[in-house]
Length: 328
Picture 1 (cartoon, rainbow, N blue to C red):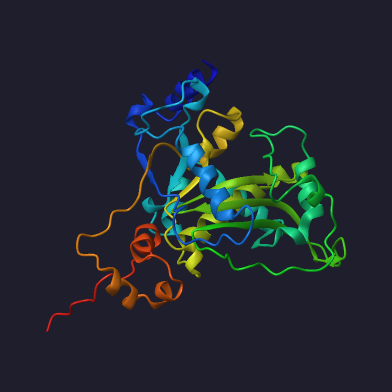
Picture 2 (picture 1 turned 45 degrees about the vertical axis):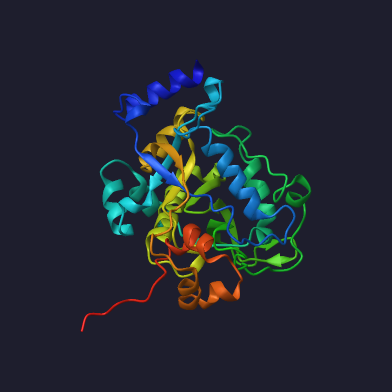
């Protein structure tokens, strides 16, 4: 009853009568593409299965829905397709929230946004996570990356950000930093202190906030608004790498769970509740596997099944599957 009551209350705050009227997010987790499986367990498998486990809890096509009320979750997501560019999103958010004003406050304080390799900032990550004993969504358990042993280790040398092995399944880290000359993380001199970070995980056409967390002492400085806005800018502006193409949704857990303060923050960030439809893109009727490989030699070189590649990512990248016919 707790989750049902909370859902009804929050839908009402969004001027929504019921979950039946929600838009459907069409999600492809892209698990069956020729992903990198060199690690054990592979990030491709971990991220896709975690998404599918979550999404199947609210898939309207699920013929065997979970029986417990708390398992009927409602995805909170930003449909990136609604915003052709970052300026459009910024104009939309100005009508409903304080994000732009708070982000300007953070910029005036000298905070900067940047991607980073998490292993260079493990002491700061640990300090951020321990700066507040209780958080609205709780700290995620992580048996793969941020184990207790890893968090307590000290960086020994600087690590460059790695290019993802798989364009469809990856984790990226973005942070808000404060300049601090000669600042040290273990044996690494970073010259800047990490104050907040977002850990973002991709699976198919969706990215999610696996972690979005700031140091308690700086939460009133506008750094979380700055972090979110810069991440939206990153995904809405022209992608710079193939790993950023084809992303259609930014998600942040669900409607039913979390404290009212977190829900208020999501609402102001323009996250909206969605029903889920897990899908697999259908091949065009005139799709020719040989022509697709001829037109996309990188797919042929990787020895990936052409039909599977087009279904999972080729259509998102708007790849040709037949020669263009030009009018004379």
